[in-house]
Each structure stands twice: as C-alpha cells, then as structure tokens.
Length: 310
Ligand code: ZN
Image (tube, rainbow, N blue to C red; front, side, top):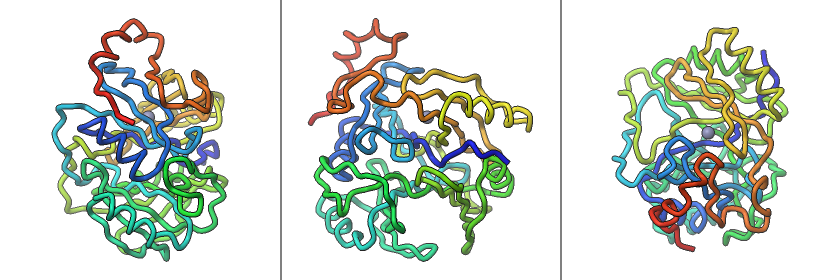
C-alpha cells in the first residue's frame, strides 16, 4: 500500500461558457481565481483554476470552457459529486445565498452523519457543500463570503460506477481505507491527508454510462508532495499493470494520468511548484499566463478568448 497520496489535488471539469463559469466560482461561491491560462493540449481553450488564496492542493477546481460543447449526461463511469467543506452551522447561510444568486438544484440532506447542501454547477455539474468536522484550512475571504462561512477546500469527491470493486481495490492500493458505508455508497479516506481526504464510491449497476460534456468532470487529480514521490507512485502503478503516462509538465504542477477500471481518468499531481511560480500571490489569476510552448500565440489568444468580466 502506498503512502505518498495526500488527498485530492484538483478536480477538472468541462464548461460551455467561460464568463458564466468564472462568475459562478468567484462571485457565487466566493472562491479565488488563482490562474487564468489555456489548455496546454488545446491552447485556444481557457484553463481556469479556482481555489483558496494560493490554490492549495485540495482546494482547486479547474475548468476547460469549450464554447461549442454539448451538455454532458450524468451516468456511470464518472465523478459524481464534488463536495466542498464549509464550517458547521453554515448551511442556512449558504441556502439563502445560493437561492438569492439563482443557483438551482438546492437540496439539503444528511449523509454519513453530516449535513450537506447539494446544488448544480453552471452546466448542471453536481456539487455539494458539507458541514465538516473541525477543518483548520484557511479560507479565501476576499470573494464576498466571510471567514465564518467560507469554503475551506474540498471535502470529498464521489465516483459513480457500475461496479466499484476494482476501483476500490485501486484506491486501497493508493493508500485509502474504507471508513464507512451506507446504502450503495462506500466511503474511503486517506490518513494524514491535506483535508480533501474522502472518496465515496457509489455503485450504480443499472445506470447507463455517462456522456461527457459541459458539466462533466474530465478527471480527478490526487496530490503528492513532490516529483520524487510521484515517481514512486508511477512505478508502483506500472508494476501493478496500469498504463500510466510519462510525467508531464503542467507549469504549476507535474502530472501523470491513468485510466481506472471504472472508467474515471485519474491524475497524480505534485504540490510543487504551485500557482505562484509565475505571478505574485497578490495578483494570482489576473493576467493570462501562457506556457512557453504557446507563448507565441499570445496576440491571437488575447483577441479570441472570451473576456471573463470582473
Ligand atoms: Zn488535472
């Protein structure tokens, strides 16, 4: 069993409209846009990152807004709900705030003894706020939500799978342990994680496979401290028979990717070097940052990428 994985690093999804996406995460949820860059593999598309003040791993939601993409259809073989941790007793505040902001799909529920508020993302993405136990992670408080209520980072992500058993074995190999189960959901958690420690495996044997599109999670990334730990994880996965990509430089972290038995794309990403490697913490996410291989496209991209608004 591996011990290098420290919880979630980021979750990456697809969106239909960059401006609406930016508005949702910065104004409605009060997160900070920590990076405005492009999809390194398709540079005419943004890659937008939202998180806490510095984009601490375990807080980072990222999007590829493809202007002409169709809506996804939720189903099996994908990440189900991405949940954020909020302080205890704040769901009435959030219910009122999100209602006033016109957010749809609001539904208060209890799961594993925790109060949670489900809501739709900008393209029908499945999100929730969970009143978590003591969570010492600092919040970004300059996005319009005060410290007493603000989001602390991810609480968990759920995987919606026809047969969760092989993916559960994989997660256990990656260092996760089963900590609870209820109905068709098995809860796994990693010890000594960054706070975004939980993965729920939801078994939906009768469900149709998801169609990925706007509002779908593209992949989910797990955090390791540094490149040495990442190489250890990569070797262990390769030795177990997983087809893992070479290490790829994503400028703000190093990434490896592999497809999992249930169909979800996993990434393992390093905490180093972080989002402040190419701009001051005070101005994170403001300027369009381009990786060196796409720097020559700046003039074209600045003209053609949709302005995000304030
Ligand atoms: Zn990623």
